[in-house]
Image 1: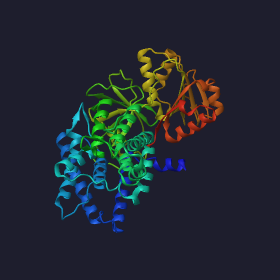
Image 2: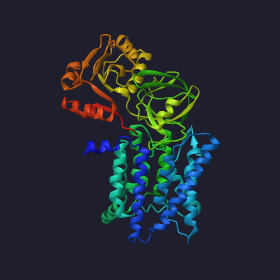
Image 3: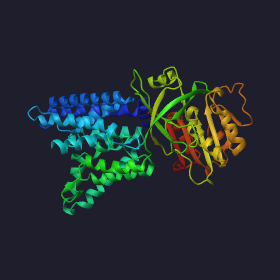
Image 4: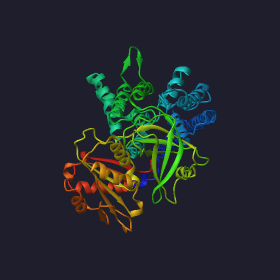
Length: 508
């Protein structure tokens, strides 16, 4: 079952999956309205969506044009869909509902460009839009999608797919448990059953978590800071939390938590100018950029890259790529593998000329070296999955820091081996053991005196190459299918799951 889910999600970006999720919920709302739910007028819902999309799209285009910044069109549709799912449905007898959806949409998109500090926008766009419309026009969000029990199975099942895709199930769990705990603590004993029923069946709990908590640009990014962020939203959005006479709405809960997330997360959007392109292996190229300001990151982390495209495809114009350079390097390097059926984004990368620009934002990722230098490590890379290890190894070389590391680098053929010179340096200067696993013909490539495994790596070969496997913390990076295969192999070898760290490239 999990294999089927992974295959279905491969090639679908996070943004496209979210659009599908929200679109299905909106159609479900129309269906419920057609079946007689008085508060869900199908015509009003359609008008709300049209107004929201039009207002958000025009606002986005205007800011993008005047500020000359590339934007992600799918994020505009996501914002508009969420607002259509939570704001009161348009009612021509009450013009304020029309004005509220327009105002919320305009403020939501404008906040991405205006409400920024340290080159990072602060507030969740939907939350700030809904709060401004509620305060300014006295038309608060109804969160009708969360108050419609008929849609609850779709909210949960679809939301779980989204959370699984972006690996945020733990964050969602913290949010839900924090919310339920706050409800139980603040509810009189005789009313707990009713309070839980209201929270689980008729509140925005699940929808807000799956659709808004996971918004990548305003959520916290570190592993623990993400959980703290989720707990803040969960507690403050519970029904009984208040300051004096002011009770928190879900939107207000997000705005408060966003301030914490801004303070706890790396800042900024970086303007990158292309200064060179190098072929590092068959169909693999390294793009070298000069950033307009210094990046502060840990080796192994990634950036979200946004490229201005004249015509995009279903995968959009934003993509996460690991930073392949060391934190102390003057240039920013990104390794990318291309194939004949590549996305519009990658085709756009190939067309870039020296001096062209691309934007990076949201430094994130927990696939980093442990701070304890004495720990034994095993790196397992597949194809272009070598890039986070390239960053880590370059960083160790720059600092002259030796660690007990074994690298197993798997490829189909010898000409797909990237960064060979750097790996040779690591062997000579750091004492790192390098194992090349080539499933096809090894060819006439020079392998120095590294260990060469011909054919697919299996448990026997892995044990022979890494006799002290049980003593090592393992890092696995590559295509999702490759990562899944090595996870099974490692478990068969008796490696505990908590000692395995993964960085799968699943087409986000």
